[in-house]
Each structure stands twice: as C-alpha cells, then as structure tokens.
Length: 436
Image (cartoon, rainbow, N blue to C red; front, side):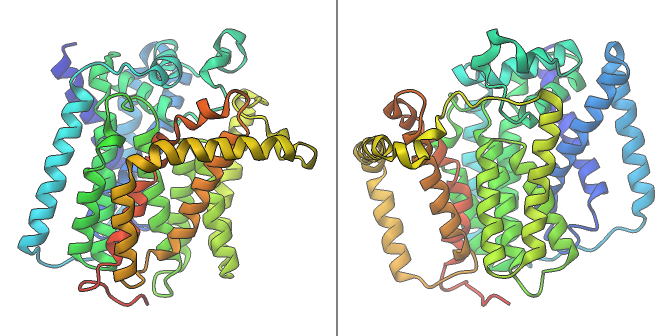
C-alpha cells in the first residue's frame, strides 16, 4: 500500500473505533458537551477496538483484517440497535470571536504537531526498543507472544509496561492491512486532537467557552510534548489519559454531576490511564485518595477497581515481572542513608537544568496564581504535585545512575501539563463560574 492509502486506512480505523465508542457509551456521556463526547468515545472505542482486534487475531490470525472489519461492523450495528434514540448533549452556546481566535491558534498549533509527527518514520530509541517493537511483533505474529515477557534477549524492552499503546498500533496496522511506521504516526496527533476537544468541551460546560479555548490553545502549544523524539512513545496518549481521568475526577466532586454515570466515567478513564503507562496507576491512586479523604467512597472505588482489574489481567498474560529500572529497597529504613544523598543529587540536577529552562513560564504561572481566585480545577493541584514528587523519588531509587534517570524528568513532567491547563483556565476570573 502507498503512504496516502495507509494513512487513510489508519484514519478510518480510528474513526471506526470512535464510532463504536460513541455507540457503546452514549448513556455514560449524555451529560457532556459534544467535543467531550467525541474525546471520550475515541478513548473508550480504542479500548473496545483493541479487544475486538485481539479476538480477531485469536480466532483467525491469517484472516485477521477481514475478521476485524466483520466484527467491527457487527459490534457497531448491534450497539446502534440497542441504543435506539440518541441522547441530547450539553450545549455550550454561541461561539464568541475571542473563542474562535483561540481555537484557531489551537488548530494551527495542532497542524504543526501533525506535520512534525508524520514528516518521517518514527525513530526514537524508546519507539524502536519498546513500543514499536511490541506493536510490530503483535501485528506480524497475530498474537501477543509470550516471548515478549520471558525472553531474556528482550529484557531491555520493558516487559512490565502496559500494552494499550502497542496493541493500538498493531490494531491500526492490521486494520490498514500494512505496517507503515510513518502512516501509523497519525495515531499520536489524533490522541492530541481528542485531548484538545476534551479540554475545550469540559471547560466550556463547567466554566466558559473562553476557558475551554484557552486550555486547548495552551495544551496545543506545549510543543515539547509533541517533538518527533516523543512520537512513537506513550507520552502523548498518556497526557490525553491524564486529562480524561482529571475531568472525571472533577465531575465526581460536583454534587450536580455525581451518581452512577459519574462513577462509570471514572472507571473508563481509570482503565484507559493505567493501560497507557505504569505511572498512570500512581495518578489514579492519588485521585482516589483525594476522593476518599472527601468521603466519596464509591468514586474512589470506581477509580481503583480498574487498576486492580488491569494488573490482574497483565499478571495472567505475562506472569510476575521484575522492575529493572528501580531498586525499591532504598525506601527501607536501613537504606535511607543512601537514599537521601541520591535525592539531593536528583533535586540539584533538576533545579540546575529543567527548572532554570522553565523559570520564566514558572514565574508567570506563580504570578497568575496570586492574582486569580480559586477555580473548580484547583483540586488537581495536590495530585499533580504529588505525582511530580513520586517521579523525583523514583529517580532517586534508580537501579542505575540517579542523574541519568533524572534526565527524563522533563519528558515525564511535560506530560502533566495538559491536565494542568484545566487548573489554569478554570481560574480565569472574568469567566469563572461558581461550582455547584
């Protein structure tokens, strides 16, 4: 297949997944604005489509593409029949010129990211050694082979990592009928686009259109997150998953929106988040703890149940896996004397590099917090801060040189920024509304 035809096939596979997600989850998302529903449908549909893909390759690996299309058609038809009448979505009102301008900025920035992602084949070391290796192996073998987890020669490929990104790439490749690295890179700008739609829709519904457009523009212009070296890794999909689970968390804290539908969205977002990267489990745990402290027990369980389900599923698939990157014995009291100097080395490394590089925007954010009032998303500040602290502690407990581990701090930290834009945009004073 040519590059253009493969790109169109990958796009078609993504649209089919979104359509399946839209049909399957219409009840859960009926309270949301249309842009949000599209983003949620993309995430939920991707998980459903990956499950259908695994069924297809298990039943008929030599005809996986045809069977995948057939199962997609059957699933979509059944869901549409069950769905019946469509549900109304929340309206966000007419769009002001300033909102249109911000959305234009967000769209232009997204186009830059799209060109960056698809201008060449994915080439980063992490893609070649981890995410792409697993995805191509799954796509070409028609299964999730056990050797990905037990072969000593693949130990450096991190068998302990979650598998949604590799399975998604493999599914799109099988859907397209060809493995084409450059065409499959479209998956990552699509995740970014869904993330921007989620930010705009959520804040338009809960705060204002201006706040939503501001968050979308800020997230779209976070160009370090969309560099070509990151395309092919899980950072962009993970940033999208953090936005989804943060929005579900904020909705669950609203007395007007709490209920079974809110808990269902928490569960969907939690499963999507923990299936992307290991650190997703940490963030979900922090959000669950925040809900439990606020005595919202059911919401916390809704967040944690998918975490347990996901890790049990992975354990059944791959068995026990060692964590080669970290030595958690450093956290035992007898080794605190070794941990503390490593912690100070990591902090010194981060302050002298990443902190200094981001000093001006950090000062601007600090001033912004002083001159604005609390917003509905301020509840995310503590979980996001603790997530960063967990990263620093993990670097300090590295099995290798802690300074080498701290070298990836900017990449991990920047994936939190789109979720942080919820906090920034919700504090816009002239457009802020009181939380119910």
